[in-house]
Amino acid sequence: MAGTRIAGKVAIVTGGAGGIGSATVRRFVEEGARVGIADIDEARGRALADELGEAALYLRCDHGDAGSCAAAVAAVLARWGQLDVLYNNAGIGWTGSFEEVDDSQVTAVLRANLVGPILMTRAALPALRARGEALRPQGVSPVVLFTASGLGLHARPAVSLYTVSKHGIVGMMRSLALDEGPNNLRVNAICPGIVETPLMYRTMVRSGDAGTLLERFRQEAPLKRIADTSDVANAAVFLASDEAKAIHGACLVVDGGVHG
Image 1 (cartoon, rainbow, N blue to C red):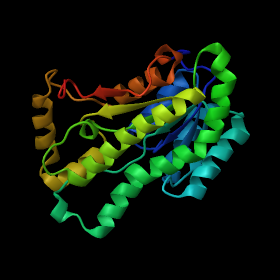
Image 2 (image 1 turned 60 degrees about the vertical axis):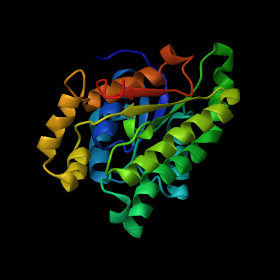
Image 3 (image 1 turned 120 degrees about the vertical axis):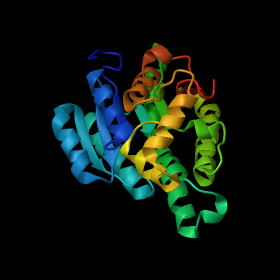
Image 4 (image 1 turned 90 degrees about the horizontal axis):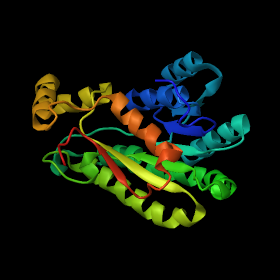
């Protein structure tokens, strides 16, 4: 699937060593981008960067820490001199009702799923705005992407805190789109449904047998299949590319038609 759809662009992908993140990093590189892999998992992040060679740079980054975010952006600028795409993908799952969530879990989920994207976006905005001004004469824009969720647009029982965090991401995306459009930044979100990843299995096991639940979700989808990581990665390539130059403030749902 190698191509040139985002050739010459420089991206940061948070959670870039994980399931959706690593699939996206690979697809970005296949389509000609250079990518900063921002992740706290140093072993997997470095292994992926080594695999991809000069087109990738591992960034040890805790996106819930403002200094770590600033350092990641600075490292990418020092290496490649520009930033065209910030993909706020990192996050964690949670299942359970509100009375099951203790204070530490509230802090952890909101820090990972909402505070982290806010801090990373804030750190990247000066570089993205500068790139936006440079690209304005060409009629194209740098891009901020978020991994939201179908649960950022709808709700299901017993996924309370996660749903709150992903609704927050959709609200952030829409607000940022209004604020940064005049600066020639495009801002969009991908809203996956259930995606087969290690994180998904770790999250589902709290609610029962993951395989049984997965099959139930597959049968709920009109297409009778659920997304895999490549589906989300391909959506990210499209939204990061100039093919999507008029798409702004949008939620691209990738869920097999569950919420169609």
